[in-house]
Length: 532
Image 1 (tube, one colour):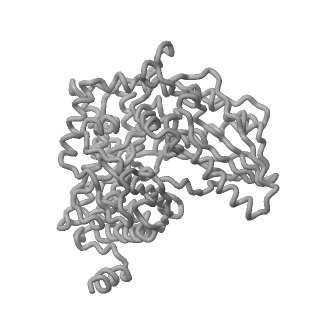
Image 2 (cartoon, rainbow, N blue to C red):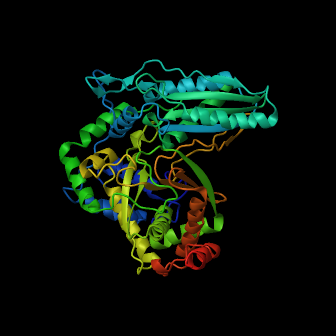
């Protein structure tokens, strides 16, 4: 009930009917580990989605000598000596050395604050958050040719205020977008820090825009939610002249990095990598989507994005289908995405990437830091199979990947050692995400807040499609490489994707090979005009 945020959960109520998804299922696993000292696989939560069924699973696991070995908790470690980076941090550190000053792993956000803002109070909030989270005052120097975490006792976030009131109204709004993009692209120095920047644009007396940029090495999407939540808790207290306090953090990010290194020892890592090697044996190194421009020998990471809105009715259809088939909304979207990619590329062996939150211990749920891991999802899309069968296959692919999600992506690349190319990313070049990390609605007294959409001009991969569920339907962000694709091509795929999702929801018995993903005008052009 606490995790699903509902008042009451009946013994036989279905977890997914109550709004459960894989991220919450991961938290269920961590709570069971804490309460019963058992390791329940994520797939078991999917297969036993009621309290009664899950209780039986837990009893069964406790009865087995093997099953009772739970993953150890994350505990504080000594701050004496050198502190290692987590595997994910080490990968970003190496990428930064390869391409110093690249803005690719900057995590920017822009928030418009309308109303009366107390700038001094805002600064105090950030100071309190920096004191609370060691990772925000950590830098990454080199000791004996190896990067280490250096935690600084003091951390300040000077809030740079820029006046825009001298400009005219239209100029001011254009300047906000220009400065947001400029700030998002400004490099960080990982060895010197700070790795968090804040700029406050003063549009007029009652309107400000806060530009907040963190480096990915200290943050992820979940962390943004934590930062907003803590800001929302601290600001009203400081504003009222009080000394607000937040619950103590049991551990810090450096403790998690040390735990990861000790738990994922050579033997365990070798066993997990063996599973992935079998799974990805013979997988294509490149998903060859039809491009508008030849692939450059070296990726420039130049990119842009388009926004897609799928109606509320379709979002509800996706949820209904997911509940009926015992899958998540993400799996429905992934099945549709795989079907589209297969049709567009003419390939049956489709490999895409996704992210997992990596927070499967309660101790780290409240920490700011870089926890996400990338998973490789490989699916065979057979034209003769029904969409429902494809969905079943996607369920199996996704759940088995979740069961082996602790292998750091960088270790997987190392072990599989695909043919390297500077022209594309290893293992996958296309990614699908459904953002369901908890992001609280930020409310500050005397202020109304809303996000500002702006262009960063970058693309990490050939194509990243990221969806969020909302009160008005699904919103998708299609980030793509402008070196490869023109806007009209991506627009066609967006429209095609909507058609495929609709077909999956309305006619799951339809064969994949009979899917109509092109619009009538495009079909006429391809079949009639070009055929001549």
